Amino acid sequence: MQNLATKIKPDILKTGNGKNLPPQNKKAADLTKHKKNPDYFLLASLGILFVFICTMPFKIRHYPSYVDWKTISLLSGLFVITSGLRLSNFFHYLSKQMVKRVRHENTLAFLLISIAAIFSMFLTNDISILIIVPITLSLSSTIKNDTHKFIILEIIAVNAGSLLSPIGNPQNIYIWHKWHIPFFKFILHMLPLFTLLFLLLLVFAHLTTKKTPLRYHRKNNNIAVDKKLLVVSVISFILFIVSEELKITLYVLPAILGIYLIFFKKVIKKTNWSLIVLFVVLFIDIHLISELNIIKNLLSSIKPGRTDNLYFSGILLSQIISNVPATFLLANFNVNWKVLVYSVNIGGAGIVTGSLANLIALKLVDSKKIFAKFHIYSFIFLILSTGIGFLLILKF
Image (cartoon, rainbow, N blue to C red; front, side, top):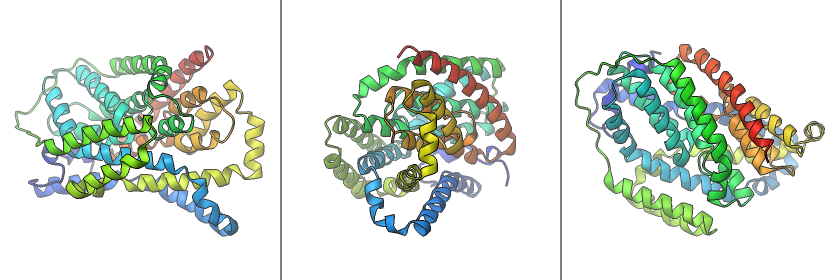
């Protein structure tokens, strides 16, 4: 398979549905859409569930009670609304307009990681990746600079940016809902960590990029923005967040889904429902795993109730099973949410499996060259951010 960076042209950003594209670009766009599904995690989770079904069939009737359906409804609403924002093409348009005014490689790197971090605060890190990485790949046909460096920095940026907001990533959504944390209280708690990690990311960008002039081909790459879809999605987003604060999400969600289903069916079709299925399965898997005696004994020996143990356990577990399952598992114990949210967000760096956003981004690029380079950058960032986070936690 050829590198997507040499196949995807800027023209694929013209519309959200692939119309009016040259045949070869349609193929590239379709391939990109196919690559977004986190099939590896879903298949692994289903495999674990299948083992439990075979070995403990008497517990099947209890499976629905293991799922936090309020969190699932919250995730479903956010995924649909953010898919609407993505398909409106507004973010593609905004990003391309900003990039047109850039003249140097390091400036472009700062711009792209800033966009990625800001998007991830409101759109979740995985959806932000689905917006920013295809844009960056498309730049391969307009600039000669190495876009892999930009993408690696963007992956780190969406994980760092998403930690600030309670809706920035799935583990934050779960913690926000489980502990009933006020929206802005959550942001204030995460602000010191976000600030320091984003500054660290800027240092990374400064050290890994140069002030090399960018040479752009003169080409008209107008992007059509679906204004109706944009307005509906922005209003829906605001209403949905307010409804969560007022604890009336279950009443507002059907109305929002109904509007999309009637007027914008493509949004419902293109929402990544496999992620919702994944989280449902994860709730069941983690509940069943946490009931195993060997796991109970292991976690009891770790003593997650202690601040330092919880912090380092969250980071380590995130490396092994990803930060979302790690959150579900540790949340079953009487733990401090302020420590837990630091650890599982920091744990998104490091190994590619630390966060679903990492996997999605590298699958979009589909290049062996970026894999090794990503882990060098990501492990260094993990080590430094672990130290920064621990110093902040000592003040709790």
